[in-house]
Image 1: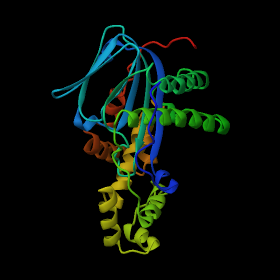
Image 2: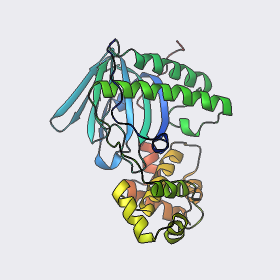
Image 3: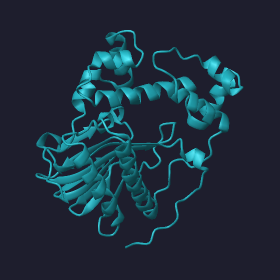
Length: 302
């Protein structure tokens, strides 16, 4: 097994607490025919990382002149840039889809990677218990894991297994020479504002001047700090958070689009649909239909 170097860069625990990590789905099976060939356009990029362990067959990802191919026994981590994917017939994968990004929306790691599972055995040692836990506790759940019901003890167990998987992934990424996209401290005033924004109810109007007063700054100064550190204003951050919530809710097909719009603070389904189309390029229903999982069959428990 390859020795792993220490992680590049160190931050305060509080800084890393703003790193947003979310497991979206984890399953295993054969890639369905309709999902063997796909193109992810610029507007479809959501900064989710797709990690695939190729159990059988192969997959090739292309972005312009660049190309990455993974075969049976290899892991491949998708790039977040526009790309085309092409699986071989009857390809089998273990798929882990997750988000790992800063409040700015920048992913911690955004470079493609292909590695041999035998060389980095920690990936499988972390992935398989996570897969078994999800299969046992969420039978039938595919791409709407975030909305599935769970008890408190199981929730923390899921997060323990997911955290173990993230640590294994980052060790391999850093050992392969990948550099994190952002490793700098977050201004304490920005931290305080982020906490307030994360508690902002969707049904209440956002008032930036009130937020700035709470932090002890003028609205203009707070704007400048946000742009310097996150490349977006507080209002833009709130809109990004609203969009992420909309995407998560749309993954649950049992929740009506109309209810999602009202829950997110929109006055009418039409207003929600217009806003979502402006952001994503698709209507909520079109987006929901496009988010199909790439697996057609599940395997028996190992």
